[in-house]
Length: 498
Image 1 (cartoon, helix red, strand yellow):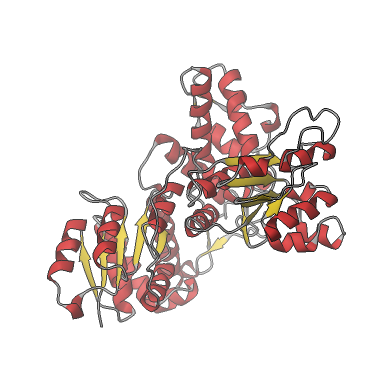
Image 2 (cartoon, one colour):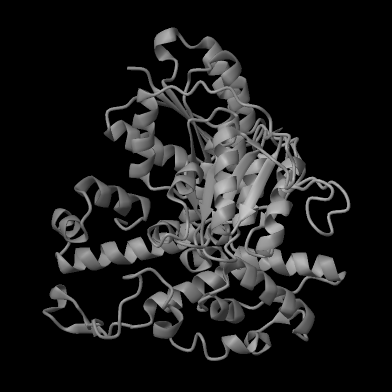
């Protein structure tokens, strides 16, 4: 069987992947630099060439993306999985446009990585892709898994002209996603034209969309090109499509179906070479059932649906978003960028954000103007934050269900090894304090926060299980719900067998 090649300058990543793949009966070969991989591809016999390559994106020498480009020149059918700890949109798009089979954000679940390798073994990615071009647009920031899915979707759509429907709450960044879809598409050299269909009066919306001829109505003193015409060869973004008047929905459907339209008062059909991206915060299926939205138009728009998460679903992104918006506001105002204390950041993470990312951006702008000192602290936050994070039970309302133990279910921790004696009272606020600890570490700029805190938690879980099972590893593994090999490996990795 041909091996799986792994290239990463981080020994721990190579070690974990190598051991995991070998447990699955898959042979491996590891490298630390892209140059070693290229040399190996030139010298290895045919039966020792890789069937899948897993590569880090940032390494000394050539990057993973540069390596990917070199490989696709000579081995176009070799599936390449790109890994990165820097999970940003440009990396995701560049990976897919370079022909990557998949994009894997660190830290990753080992089982997920193994499943990905197995899928790559069964498939071949031979897509030819173009280099990204077009005008620079604001970056979409996000490390949260839900945002990584959005990045993947944009990457996969980067060579498509297909109609996309973006759904999500108001203020969640739907136009940014639409702009990114345009920027990373074959139409990037064309215009990106946006129109909010809910913000324009019904009587003017038809003219805004399709243009009008001179004299077609009172006040039409000259011919006017509509948004469809302005977006020719590019992308038309129809925001809040769910609020479009019903009779105009019919005209939009005709454009999407026939590819042509008429200006208001016009008799000459105009061919439309436009990609349409629509967005809404409405439940379009419900509006279809209520007779407020055309079902045939819904199906025309709903070719690819991309759901954008609310800020409540990605609160782990809040620190980097706050930093970005504070820097952005400072640049706009021509002042030094302010910093935020760990306590203030923790208070902000407990807020509900009904206005999503747009609301957070406005708050950061307010803080840049109103906070008196260079370091923003809890008293400097806007009035809506007062008392918001006083208790975890209040502050964590927006957290996923089951993420924090409730006060009603908190129980004393018992140690069977101690004959049932209570070792300590279960701390109802442990999850909240862990979050504050993480915020503090992140604010200090500590490296590898995920690894440090995960190792601490894993160590305590294993030590507690071993104590409960009088040192019997197999029984401890069963109680923790992990495998025997896993607990043995973890004990060795964490240095618990010293």
